[in-house]
Amino acid sequence: MVRGLGCFIKWGMNKVIRVPRNYHKGQRCFIIASGPSIKNMDLGWLKNENTICVNESYKAFEFEPTYICIGDKNPWRYIKDQYAQMIGSKIICSTSTRGNVGEDYAGDNLFAKVPLDVDREMWRDGFTYDLERSVPKGYNVVAEIAIPFACWCGFSECYLIGCDCTDGGYFYDESVRGQKIDKFQRFDPTVMRCYETIATTEDLPTRIINATAGGNLECFPRCDWPPKEDLLVTGYYTPNGNYRKLAQRMKASVEKQGLRCEIIERPNLSRKDLPNPMPWVLNISQSVDHISYMRDKYPNTNILYLDADAVMKRPPELFTRPDFDYDFAVPFVTDQKGVYRLSGNTMFFGTSPLVDELLKVWKFKQVTRNLEMILGKFKKPYYEAWDQQALQDVLPTVEGLHWLKLPHEYGRIMPHPSGFDVMKNVNPQNVVIEQHQASRQNRQTA
Image (cartoon, rainbow, N blue to C red; front, side):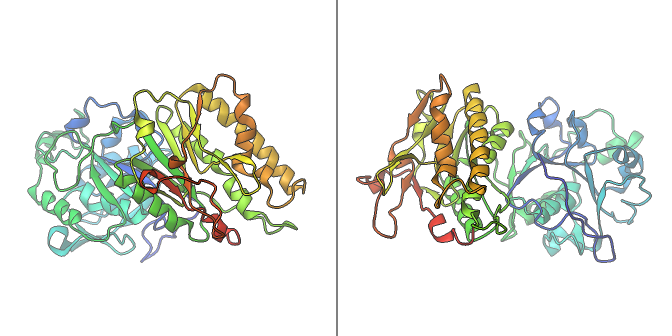
């Protein structure tokens, strides 16, 4: 689910938006337009996603979207009272050529009034997304405010749905525009030039992907959504050390193999108030929370968890084979002390209810071990509280769980700086996933 906004930028002459810049950095979003292509689509799967509707496209949902963008002076006066009654949606508007969109509003969910610069046109003067200043005319609410807002928020990926770019009207039959509806259903060709300007703008923080079924918008790369693949690669990082940069490298390596990857930032749980600070151990203990979150978000999708410093070298074909029917899979290694341990930097989770049971007992064990560690029960390096040790201890307790010890090619731990190698005799040409163990260097700052 989308986080609640914990801090606002105050209204003022130069502060026109209450959503902090890069607030959704590393996340993805879906812009839902009003094209007829979504008339018979089931969009219920978007309930737990970041959704950005425009004008009246919220009518496609049985739930309130995360954001609604508007910049059209014609529907504003008719629809603003409906917006004001919404509880969960935040309204983002450009002020229109007359400057009256966002005015005379009774609700408290208006989060932006971005000035429209009537002297600048996107197709001629270029695409910008500094919403503290202004936006150029884009001749369409998606190009003019929804996509700039997605870039402002720092979304890594933005999927367009219902951006038909045709004269086919809307997916709904009744419009707040009333009797003049036909006048406003025509597609303005200038909008296509604005889309092309966005598509050719360099160094955008957000990758724009067209997931519309059909239509005429071809300047953005297309994809089917929901995606046909049933494997999601995921991981998390904490905002310290170089983990964010490593996570970006991991995501790029996964996407290079044609797979979807979703990485989120989780808080740094450093406890410097303790006699013996244990930030690294507490941070890695968040893996069960992260995997549980992704499992709830994608209950029908196989999940491959990787540590943030991983690099995917080849497609993980094992997990996509028709005969791969395991609930859980993970590699094991023998460490420097000769102890046979589960290696939690690469973990596969299927969709069986037994996976939920595994996560439940792992979570309970992890919380217990963390408390015991804080109370001083364990000695450094606190192996008992490591996430992979807690998981290894509960793994045999889940009756009926069908699981597999992964080959070392699917979690190749690179040799220790001392030269010790816990995964000997692995052919580099066959490695699918490399694990670089960045925590060796970052434990002091994690």
